[in-house]
Image (tube, rainbow, N blue to C red; front, side):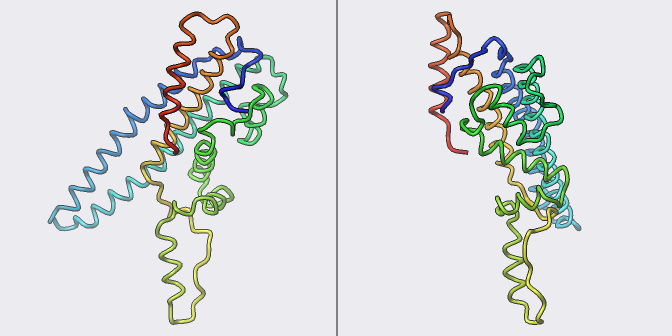
Length: 242
């Protein structure tokens, strides 16, 4: 089932301002994430072009700071998204009839709860692949080496760009040492800055799609509703694969 065809049966429970969630996460990216990364990029560029003693070390420190900052923002976006989702599900289940502690539920349980309460699976949304990856990234950032980091390495080894080179070099060692095998240590992970934009858009897309279903489910829509839906459909068609 696609979001184009789905309708809420208890639409009155879902007046939660999905578009507001989308606006807020995009504002966080624009007003907080982008300026921080721009500042760090400027610092890196300054040190890389400097002839001062220790400039190479300072540039490397700045790159490591950027890496840590991206990890922190991955975790922040995952936390924002998860709080939004938990709050939405609580709104859809005001009397706790689902018998699920939505504040403690794991990601898999939250997906099941969404399906029971909304009768559509989260993977029907365009944004789900990135949201699912964001959840894994957030858990790995929170806990470091462990099950989440191992699963992330298996699913997205491209987040460890240096690891493949190290493995290749280890096979070429002439001294008989055992070659490196995965999973790579989480400390070597390097999330690209573009992933933060992808995660932001995925969160926003999800809430815009929730809002679309809400509008489509209104039993007696005002004349404004069809126009809004047409605008949202046009925006959905502009989406690029993320």
